[in-house]
Image (cartoon, rainbow, N blue to C red; front, side, top):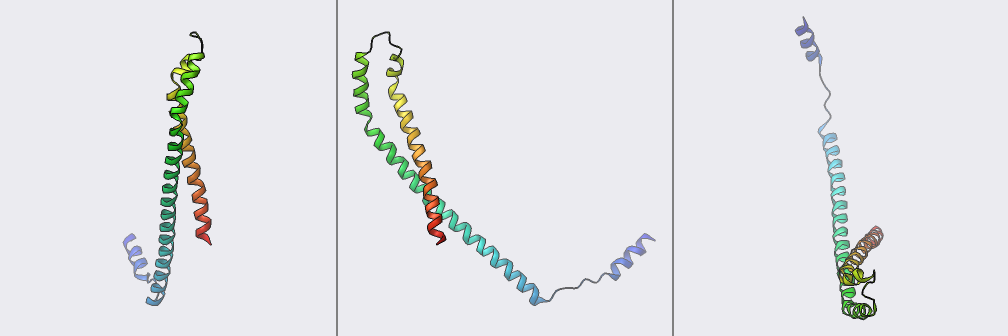
Length: 130
């Protein structure tokens, strides 16, 4: 009895198929939309690569420029260390000042690179949208 109902249901089922022209039109519309998305993602990827390259260069330059000041900093610290009394609480800071200086240089370089990335993305986006 159940089989007869199912057979009659499937026998009566006659879906209306769209024409080939309508199918091709919808397919072409979908392909065009996918192409637009692909072009946009390619532009975003290229823009991101440019921004990363700019950020790396700026971070390297900032780190290099601050590294050039290290000999002068070491000389100033050596003079300052001679003037400190032996039992000064600043002695550990002075002894490890080069480590602290390298940490500050690294942090400054990373900070400059991140900000440069954000600014370059914003400028490249504004320039690309015109």
